[in-house]
Length: 334
Image (cartoon, rainbow, N blue to C red; front, side, top):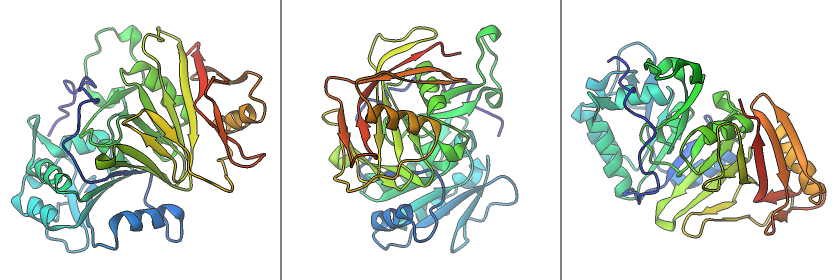
């Protein structure tokens, strides 16, 4: 099937209550054995036997395969097969792997209508069972993801204002945020810049070997894995073409909770923190060590200024502090 994403702009009402009840997990990549992410995934699945559905770029689909269903990209006929939807409904949990946001969209929708696989996954979640998206499948599950504009095959209204990257949505069942990750070719500043371009109010950038779990019944999002998550929030009416002012940024680690019902961050009680050693995290740690001063970070995505809020909190021992809801301005963004 040819690209059908031209009309699928990120204009859905993401704040609307989700009918899904089971946990929706987004992992940056497949967890390695003996890691925190692997342990957290096993705890989520409760030692069940998940059904793996892997999106492949070529070759025939194999819907009867015992250990792992193979679904070829854009094989909407395969995604519409009753045998696949029945396997989903019989499984205690489902893990989607491979592909990309656009590739999953091409496969899950036929003439812009959801296939049986979409309906089966939705019913599976409504019955309280877990769905996990790994890598590109995680981007497809998220409330928003990042795609290359050239891959959309859209006619640009104003080519002079065309951007290389844009925000789009496929299933949109995950945490109500734009989600990006190191493993998907991103960095926190890219995530923030794409958040500034979209209409969304939150974004989460996943560090290496990390993930998020939307626990719809508890109205919260939980951080898993060891990689940590950088979480951004924006304030209404604070955007213009090149600036994003008065936003909030938090550095979240394993066990931290984003409380959706009360719009607050609840940090886990940690004895130690091992932040990622990259420029953005170092900037946050520099701010945490001296919050009375403004910390700046310059990148190709713009100039970031970080400063203390009235309600700024710090978690962790000296030398490993984590700012909770520091304030930022993004200036001169291209």
